Length: 275
Ligand SMILES: [Ca+2]
Image 1 (cartoon, rainbow, N blue to C red):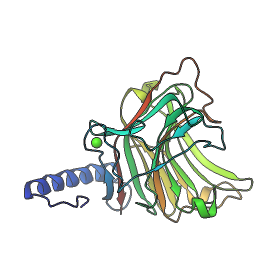
Image 2: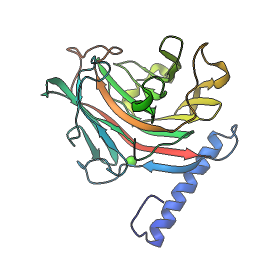
Image 3: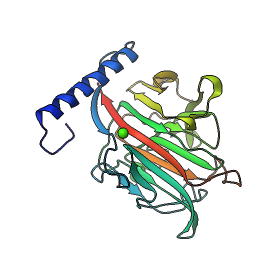
Image 4: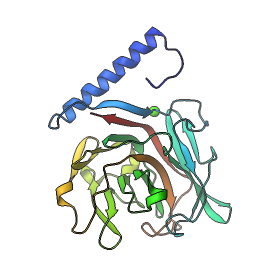
């Protein structure tokens, strides 16, 4: 479906098998919900080690002064900060002087290439860690540049801050002050560090509900009917996907002597399903 070159019959059959197998796995995990999730977009990040992410799918946000100027990284479009490694996308935060910033990193988005209203968005990710390190897999409303934030809405599927043994999933929307948000943290059984291994982070976003999962364990259900007083539900329009590592900023604070660089976020795949 996504390959523009001619497929051999054998390859096509193999791909079909993988696709059917993946969907069968999902049906059992989501049996309580109505309908089957069908794959509509994916990037498995296969390709030559050291090569850039597919420019047909990803756009690099670049520059410094992110997070109201509190974040310390300069986002580049260099393969030094985002490259394929053994079937994963590696986003690499480095300690290096660059355009007046002390760190470099990457922030890749699908804006202008792929956006969607509702669906299951998932990624298999091995997160980095350390004081001041802030990796994320998230969705942002396509109208960010015309409507501003938080009017555009934001769905944070996974944020992992510092050396914490939890990840956080949150939706942000306009409220009585500025940012109304609903979310929660999730901790692995045994309080194991998320950075030790890959985990599958997912949201199932529908017209009346948002559900967050880690490794197919549902840990947060947000109902449209139970939003904070004075907030506005803005989740009925297209959102795009973002993968990034921020360094510093108001939430994690700055790196310190305990933080080691480079720090790498490995993304085995991103998959989007519809039903
Ligand atoms: Ca992969």
